[in-house]
Image (cartoon, rainbow over all chains, first blue to last red):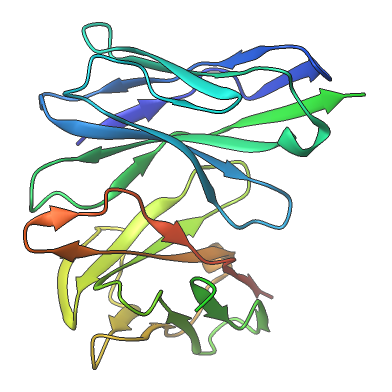
Length: 116
Length: 117
């Protein structure tokens, strides 16, 4: 089974600064998707950004960008100009691109605190 | 349709009782997932449906757990003879697969928090 590892249980960042959250994964597949989900205290998971493994270009969504290193099986999230509303749990997730592989594998999460 | 809806939001039950949770996915989504999340952990996969067919079940889903999606719309997750170890947040998510094209991300509901006392 695929595994997703987030080695930073907690991170903090000053408001307006930049922070990078780390994620590594283990898979034998070549085609898959990677995601970062945000889970605020209200508990609803919200998609932040996704990356298709076949794309070499790193995904970006406004202040959020990823550093996808396929050979190293690394998928980090960079949050620029951090805002108070960015405080949440962040989960890295993996999903196979096979038609029959549909479950998402999640890491254990990183709790991000934004300091005013 | 504003998203995935789960009911109830909170459930407290005595050990040994049965509980049932409901999930209403986004209306055009034909895939529905159940996940369990305990404090400090990421969501763990339980099962998923494509339309009304339950296509995959985790080994975490013991015989006391059963899920249904009778008409390919809403889904229920029942836990029989609850145990204290069942206390967790139960998350439902949905996604769409149409004509071999999959909307790759899943959309999550707010979850049902179960406390077994």
